[in-house]
Amino acid sequence: MKRRNRRANTHMWNCPRCRRPFTRPHQNHSCGRASVSDFIEGKTPPQVKLYRRFEKLALAVGAVNLAPAKERIGFQHGRIFAAANGLSRNGLRIHIVTTAPIRSERVVRTEIMGPDCYVNHFLLRTVGDADDEMSQWLRQGYLWA
Image (cartoon, rainbow, N blue to C red; front, side, top):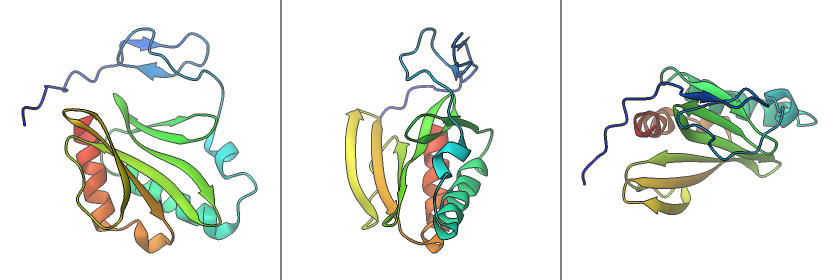
């Protein structure tokens, strides 16, 4: 599979309303002020610990910006390569975007968005689910971005 050169991850444009950085001018997005605090508000200590563990893994892969939105927390390196999409008593729903599908029983669902764009969905139930294998997948996502 041929990979496109994605090294030009310099931010070309910041939204004038929400100040979020993008690699393309006038990128479509949900504009608004959101924060990690909003995302974890009202959650139990074990739920917050689960989110924080995933956040730590995602931030450790390189130069990553947090990109909070109303319903999720994105992890951005040029583009959003991973996100925490929901936190409930069932666990933390996340996705990681990669150039090829992740082959694992841990993947709940994979969406094909293009020839080198696969959105791999997971449900993390315990802090132990955010492990070295997950870190490797996050590195793949980081390189995709």
